[in-house]
Length: 237
Image 1 (cartoon, rainbow, N blue to C red):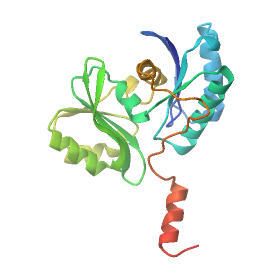
Image 2: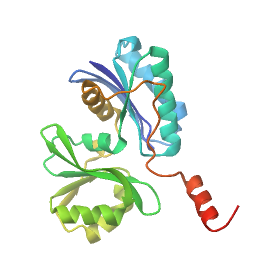
Image 3: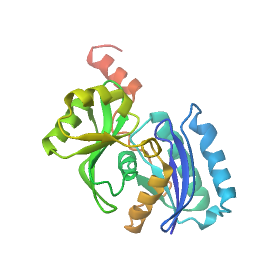
């Protein structure tokens, strides 16, 4: 089974190819370039390096959200375009699930934290039995206080990762009452390798969709939509 993985849900842009139990290639950049500039050139370079014929892939796994609204739209459009051109199915992998899967096999409860602004985070809670992932709390958009309260209630050691870690580290230090740690740099951000590997698991279960049917899962309204809703609630136009 050969899976192409794409992730543009945050600042990171990442492309990977997983074949069965092997990561054949991965190109990940965490820098200030727009994903519309990077994803397809990155895919082209990876494909050339590993002599990949894209027609031979079985499916395209995409970080399906939540995350950056612009990033998700670019990733979705890229995956849909490739899926339609290659006539391949899409595996929409929840972004927070894929982020947690970076730490597959970890002994502690895993808590991804993506910065969703306004003291909110895209997050979830996960445990592993070997490489089998169990969601203790499905991905959600909540305040940092709510997820830390839930962690304290569970009473289990926890490891944090994601771009929300530097944003919320002081709050965690002050309010987290269980033993906690942080993932190392090479595992603490989105990676298409994890998207592809988890996508292969889901694809094996038949969890896929057509390219035409795929759309991102935002979990909450965009900032412009929220502001518009607030204006309407306040009687504005």
